[in-house]
Structures are given as structure tokens and as C-alpha cells.
Length: 112
Image (tube, rainbow, N blue to C red; front, top):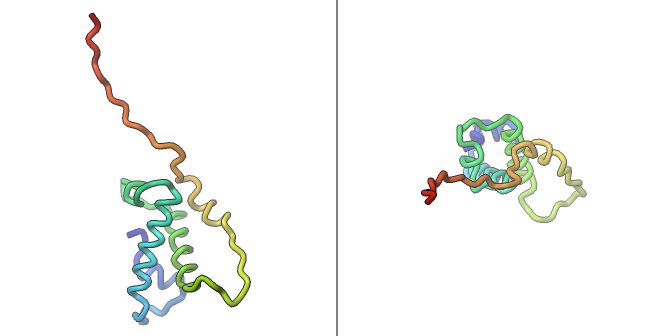
């Protein structure tokens, strides 16, 4: 998991002793991970970061996604909000895979 429940609660300003939304928050962490993997064009965050080291900007992007989904649980908002796509693009852009690297096989040829 990219984030811990404690990190998400701190970012979302949810009291650590409040546990009613814990299952929802765990679900949102998984959704954020899936969303980030899709944005980076990988099958999973584990594939994107095989060494297990998640860059701070990617972790912060996950916090933003979780907080946004937690605060806006419905498809309709009572207020007018403006999307700032540059934020996630700026945080995740350096890690996007633009072309898939293919493994090159060394095949020996027998020249006659």
C-alpha cells in the first residue's frame, strides 16, 4: 500500500480515534493506487515502482486523490469547484511510462 491509514487521516484532518470511516478510507487508498497506476500506464504501483520506493510526489498525489474522493462522495456537489489537473499532472508526470520497453532476446544465428 502506498499510504497508511494514519497518513490519510492526518492529511484529511480526521481524528485518529475516529474509526467509523476506516473501511472506506482503506478502499479509497486502493482506488488511489489503481488510479495512479493507470495514470502512469502500469498495471499496478508495484510494477511501476519495483524497488518498493514510492517517490514523495507520488505519495502526495495519492493523498490528494483519497482526500478528494473522501470529501466528494457523491457525483454532484452543492458548490462550484474547479478542477486543477495540473496538480496531479505535475506530481505524477515524471513517472509516466510513455512507451513500453520490450525485452530484447539475444538469439544466436548459425551462419552457413
